[in-house]
Length: 233
Ligand code: ADP
Ligand code: MG
Image 1 (tube, rainbow, N blue to C red):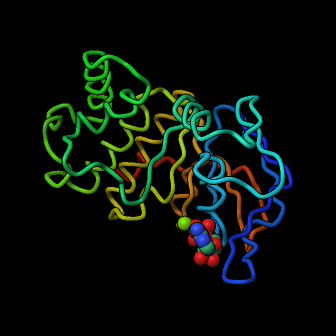
Image 2: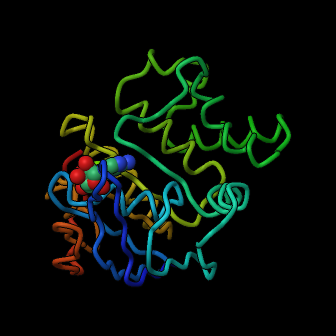
């Protein structure tokens, strides 16, 4: 699914620079569910953003589904992003003046799909996350867990090969976190490849593999016995 070799990333600060990723090697196969762990500032989001083509590495190789991701034009990057990737974030990133259905339909708009098809697919995905009845509600009328479900439905609308999540449970209480993880596990059970950043051990243990970052290098990369979230919900 993806291969990363000797990846480096620095950010300029004034006259010097901050070396954030220092030679990352990572390979993820289709169907995996991987947690990227590490303390705050260890480079987790930087790595996820590069994988998500929201940012570019300075050095190294990144191949996504057979496509070398390098020096792509904005337009090409946007096309690949739309085709390969779905994103969820800690802060949901829903559009506040659009209702749940319109939020979920948005990626399909960017794919140039017809309005009727967009709304039909969006409703299908909202139903899948259990929020069909909430289709016409605005984000501020939804709970945190419901907002994240809408965000997941939006991420899935264009049927991406890879779902990227940056601290998807970071803004949720424990019970709601487990409900969201239960849903994400069910997606992985169906075959969706998932890569998630978290700094919570119990959330990471619900993945099948844990990659630990420290100061921009991978300290540990192990397959683990997956804890099922369903036992807590
Ligand atoms: P994590 O997600 O593990 O908390 P990040 O990848 O967000 O870490 O950040 C790693 C380091 O890079 C931090 O020290 C952060 O301040 C710095 N950093 C992140 N993004 C930028 C940026 N756009 N410009 C400058 N420094 C950044
Ligand atoms: Mg982060």
